[in-house]
Image 1: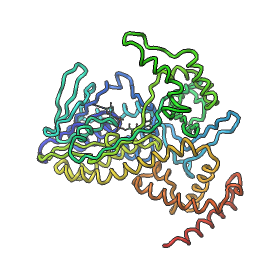
Image 2: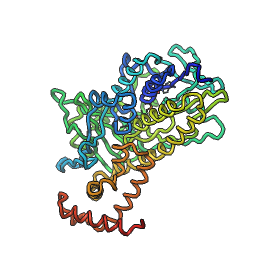
Image 3: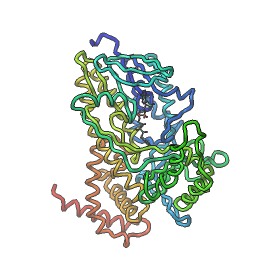
Image 4: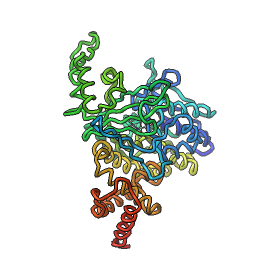
Length: 490
Ligand SMILES: Cc1cc2nc3c(=O)[nH]c(=O)nc-3n(C[C@H](O)[C@H](O)[C@H](O)COP(=O)(O)OP(=O)(O)OC[C@H]3O[C@@H](n4cnc5c(N)ncnc54)[C@H](O)[C@@H]3O)c2cc1C
């Protein structure tokens, strides 16, 4: 491949990463073909099958800003969430709003997955050198020919080749699956014992939100939890994160129906939940999520109708294959690093990938893909590993610690130190969600701060703290922090 030839890119997957990458590369003069397994969501309606809203934060906005779409998405499709609203198990206990940051302007943003995907598809199609084809399912990649093989909805097979093939085809990526067959390809996939299921709190009269609109709602229940993110139409998308088996599990409430469905003959009508099973769901929710039940009129229907998804972490390397003629295959987004959703970072990380790859390709061209793609992986892989770890850790924080007074107090001390020493101390959450410092750096500084808090908190007992942080308490935090720093070797 020489630099004078047209530079062709084939992107497998027109999801969030694939459609954003198409815009970037088209603007660099590449001829871009995007092939997507699903039908066009603008005509077929969006059937994401996964969380229908997502938290978009600084890194995702940085990815969108590179193609000028950040402001558009914030203005047209986002609801800012500057904190969490924790819902206690008792209906009489008060809700607790926990700001994510001392700066009220720091917010994560609830956006519709389908709406964002459509915004990106429309923007990609406005580029003259982008073609998007739907209903093409990638079944394999021919690495020698640098071509991908797609099956059409009528069972035909078509081959598409390009100088660069980008696999943006999600956690179960067929492009990655082909790379896995290469010698010395490292691969691991780990499933959580928890799955997820989406439910809904519909809009109230006049599209009003039934609970606080500007918050990520969370019902932490120890080994499990429910969250709810606001939609602009006044509804909330709730997501249960429950164990598949055991107490408070999906199996406990839907296992008997699943057994009957498995046992049904292929031509039998699909067994439906019994009244007792439906009542059991409502009864269970009334015990564990009592304030949510009156807001969820379709609870039992949604619970049995909506699928239960699994949560996987994928780590692999190398993310690329380069042929002797210079053509290459690369994977990015969930295809390269699927992570669990508890830091709300999978899409954000995928958008960072897109901009990082596009900037490298812009600087180096498509002529030395070997070096460029190696550099892309060198920069991004440690960061993807870091956010994968932090996302797993954050599950414990969300489902278990958020409801505990000791944890809330620790967060209060953390934010106070951040406020008192704004140039020195940044909580990990702030670095991950409100900055674009590398995830590895956010994890390193987060661990340091954690150890620092372990030394400070015993000197500032919760029992002696005022209900609201006052000047005396802040002065004490200041003095103790400074004295601890003085003890540290320079
Ligand atoms: C419950 C849940 C909640 C989440 N919440 C958040 C959040 O709040 N914030 C956040 O940042 N992230 C969140 N995520 C993660 C986020 O959804 C993903 O990280 C993001 O979608 C990755 O984008 P992607 O383009 O790499 O993959 P995808 O969005 O999965 O897109 C892949 C595309 O490839 C297509 N495709 C797949 N196979 C083929 C094939 N064989 N041929 C052709 N096309 C194919 C798919 O149809 C799809 O369009 C959440 C995930 C889950 C499961």
